[in-house]
Each structure stands twice: as C-alpha cells, then as structure tokens.
Length: 340
Ligand SMILES: Nc1ncnc2c1ncn2[C@@H]1O[C@H](COP(=O)(O)OP(=O)(O)OP(=O)(O)O)[C@@H](O)[C@H]1O
Image 1: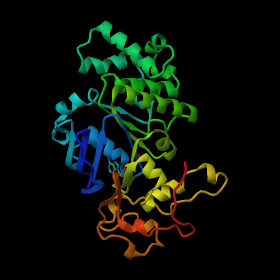
Image 2 (image 1 turned 120 degrees about the horizontal axis):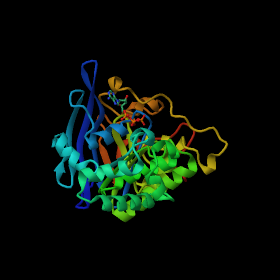
Image 3 (image 1 turned 135 degrees about the vertical axis):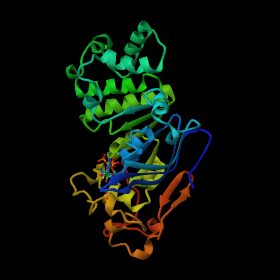
Image 4 (image 1 turned 60 degrees about the horizontal axis):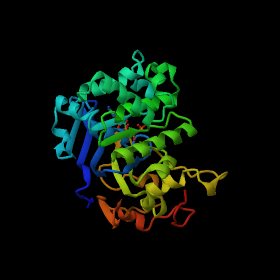
C-alpha cells in the first residue's frame, strides 16, 4: 500500500518492536511502514505512549537486545540497519544519522566545553585536522544561529540558556552533514519564541543539507508550522499518513480528527476544548484485533470498524487505517475540515 519511490532513502518495512515486561514481550510499535525522502520533514504525531520514541530509538539502534525484540527491515540507503551490530551502527549514528533529543542538558556533557563536544563527533567520523575542526565548529555554531560562536565554543553547557543548548545539540547532530536527522520533541522544553527559532533552524538545515528530517512531537502547532508530511500514530500503529495539507485540511481517521479537535485554534479560542476520552492502552492491554481507537469513540457501532484494519490509500499519498472514517462523526458535530 505504501508509496515507494527511488527518492526514499529510508524505507521502514513492517517494523515491530516489543519490550519484555514480566518475562513476556509486548509490541510497543506494530508493523510500521514508513518512508522518508531527502528534502522533507516528516512529522510523527500522537499522544504520549503511542510509540513515537520507540520508533525513533528503533531506527537509531538504541535498544538492549536482551529486553527488546525487533522485526522487519529498515533500509537506509541500501543497508538494513536492523542487521547491523554495534560497530556497524556506530558508523551510521552521528555520521549519516543525527539525533536531537528533547532535553539538551542531558544530551550534553556538563564537564566539557562546547567546542570539544562538537569536535568529538568529527574525531570519530572524519579525518579533519584540529584547525579544520575548529573552523567547522565555528561554522556550525553560526549555522544554528549562535550570535557569538567564538565565545560559545569556549563555554560549558551550564553557561548557556536552554535555547542555546538546543542549538548546540543541533550543531552536534549536523556536524557530519547527516542525510537523516531524527528530532524527538526538540522544542518541548523551550518557550514559544525560542521554539519558533529552533524550528526555523531545522527547516534551514533541511534545505541547505538536503536532509530528511523525522520530527517527533505531540504538538500539532509545531507540525502545522514545520512538516511536509505527517504520520499519525496511535497505540503503536500508524493510523493515517499524508501531506501536511491532507492531514490538516481533510483529516479522515477518527483519531486524527480527535487530535485536531482537541487542539487550540483561532476559531475555538475561549471555548472548552474537545477532550479525547480514555487513555492510550498500555502494552499489556493492547487490543489484539479490531480498530485500536474504537474504545475511545464508543458511540461508533462495532459494525463500522474493520476486524483487522489495514491502511487504505484514499488519495495519492494519503492513507488511512480502518474504513470507519467513512461514517464517523462526533456526537455533536458534522464531519468537516479544520483550519489551523
Ligand atoms: N523500555 C521499555 N520497556 C517497557 N515498555 C516501554 C519501554 N519503553 C517504552 N515503553 C512503553 O511503550 C509504549 C510507547 O512508548 P513511547 O515512549 O515510544 O511513546 P511516545 O509516543 O514516544 O510517548 P512520549 O511522548 O511520552 O515519549 C508506552 O506504553 C511505554 O510505556
């Protein structure tokens, strides 16, 4: 069902990741199919616990094999990442794949100057001389919008603001010009003005380096501002994906529509926001069949849901899991688009 073209440099095929809990393995993500192209920002959205970070750490090879079972294929520029051992993965991480985490403070070493931390990744992946690395550090700090690169290069993380620290983390992630950048909630810890600046930096980097970016967030405002394509995750599955325009203008899956309705917007300012009843199921309580979102829209009759929902392509590049979208309505509202 998924669109595969030559420009996809990352092809995630039928990937599931299960964690060991009390001696048994439970899927945190199930049968994920996803593609990323150069020059695009793909946002992955969903509530907390839907499996977004598990997908990111699965791509990055950050799971303990004793505690985790991973199946499927992650084809990155012709290499199946899931077949690599630690040494193999280390050649990709930092060089071809950069990662930006939510909390810049824990991503940085408090005892090392910023210059040394950025140089470190080049020590491992490049043969640049000391002088070349120094020049590159200043260039990178400038690229991520640090006003005085010379000064910042000599500082320690605690001397920087949260926004500056996140810029440094981005500089480290892009030091070796990776083709893929995975940014997991990169702006969540920052205030709104700084958030916008960091998103600008990410967009500039994507354009300049022709990178593909996977942006993980629960914030639909960030998605609307930044993403080219969006994959909506619920309970470990992708339930809808499409261009940002498709997802925001013609959302189909009840979960996507519920998320959009629960988001503050210009035309619902002051109104009580829609609340999605219930919770994302825990891994042990994940329904083994049917539409996993069904318990949270109890007014929809069981007959509207598919027994084993698969992705349906409803327009070029726009896919929805389960045909329940065809008849879905909120109890108090007719189906319609949402303006952001
Ligand atoms: N190491 C682990 N062992 C057991 N369960 C885990 C582990 N890591 C995550 N989980 C569970 O897997 C599910 C998905 O978690 P994940 O962190 O990937 O979701 P998320 O969408 O990224 O949420 P958040 O935004 O809160 O990080 C959750 O139910 C979580 O409790």
